[in-house]
Length: 234
View 1 (cartoon, rainbow, N blue to C red):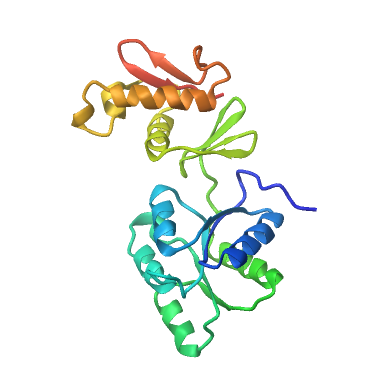
View 2 (cartoon, rainbow, N blue to C red):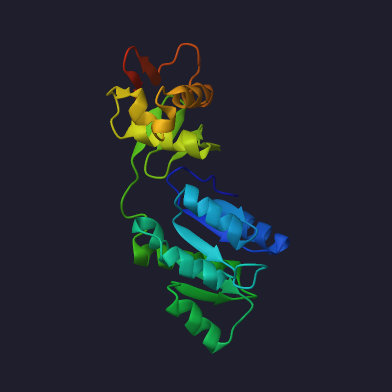
């Protein structure tokens, strides 16, 4: 019976241009208890990686446009934790030179197609243990039926992911840095172009619809008169 992925489960990004293979991998990994996001090409994967962190990439090499090798090279050039994201190369190319190229670019492992799904799971588990990708528990804030992962900028409601725009995720992350402390509206904005904080007000209204049981009488995303806003987790 499929295991229900929890917010604590490792989050994998599967990138493959073959619709059938991509969906099969997603279904199998989800049954194993992982949280799985998919992308059809490197461009889509790059956009996702710029918005949120994942624990591991399962990455095809031969794709239209940017190749998996090129995406790996770009990823390794990113600063901080993102640039250290583990990568498992998954491809039909099985020549030694291809394996060497992938590993030299910073991939953590290499699995040739066709493959046994159980081997894929075992290799993913080995990479996660070796790299310690889940060694540090993320900061998670309880907001009633919602849970916000402040490190990842991800929101869950009853263990199901809630879609956040980039602006909403960044706003919640800023508020989560100082829970139960009011933060001035202008400090929550993205720049001087919104000195009055109108954009922040709009984002707060949208976030309350996703978090609050009664958005008109917010419990968790509170207004502090004359100052700005405050996140008040349980």
